Length: 199
Length: 199
DNA sequence: TTTATTATAGCACAGTTGTATTATTTAAAT
DNA sequence: ATTTAAATAATACAACTGTGCTATAATAAA
Image (tube, rainbow over all chains, first blue to last red; front, side):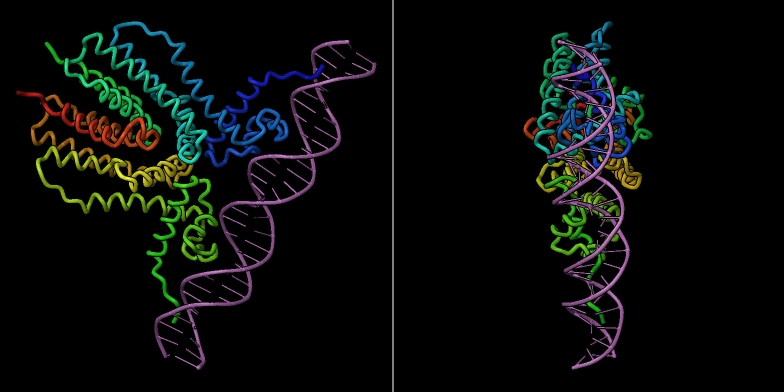
């Protein structure tokens, strides 16, 4: 009998409006009024989908992690193993504008997670999920016997994971100093140095 | 004839109070009232030293960069060159609680700099200063002939710099996953892999 | 068409924000 | 002790905040 709206779809639209506000004006400007305006809704209407502001922010942050997961799950890799690994790792980097904005917004949420246990929980989850991907890549190198016998897997996981996030943040903050191409070149070079040099 | 106060010293005290507020409650809580209370001052008094809030935040951010520079300038290094380089790079890392808090606050400012050109300017300066230190380390490796002939200096600078910042951020966000010791071990290992492996 | 229920919108309220203004207190120089 | 400029404090105000509450509009089922 009543008007029916798909709540999930509407929440996604609102969350994307939240991203837009954060990307353009900062997370401190992500007020219910500003988000409602960006989503072309009244405040009262927005609050039918998110009763509190923390709930809105939490959902908006979570949606980023879901988008990242989806992208990784949906991508299909072909070609020589080293190239596949490279492409997997490239998926972490903000190499196009969408990903760049996404990561800028993620950085804002990350900073806030330092003083918000709820957001920190989500941050921790994503951290471990991404680390797992890096771990898989490193262990693939081992099982393919691309690396030396004394290869220190655990250290190499942390090294590669930190390198990726470091490159991403540097590019977000100083795109003129660290270009997309350089980002890619560094990852490529890093993988090469991991593999044993023979012949 | 009037009461005289050292403005610079007072501003430093206020800036440190700002850090405290940001570290404990987040940058969005760094209001003039909260900072004044943390500095045990009235709002009116605080505004004798900082007439606007952006001015206060800008100064507080800048003071962090000055503290980092001071630490680097005042430190004296002795011992074998590789160890000296290691210690220089360790100086970047949040290995004690002071540095950890400092970097948490810096991360908050960094996130805000994405939507604040004034803060981004400061961020850019610091970025280039620190990159210069990394560059010096890499070029020392070359002039000491510790590295192979086909050593790609520019790529290695970006790689090492990104690695350092990535480790630092990972430790700030997930200290249980990436300990101080691991941070150090990864840097040490990275330097070793840079040097040519012979005999 | 009526009806029931959801969606939407608007208003209100108390609390917080940055900042301007004004008054008071303080202490160094006379 | 008096003077005087600086330091400190208090108050005020308009704008903005999250959120509660109420009324209206819309629409799918009867």
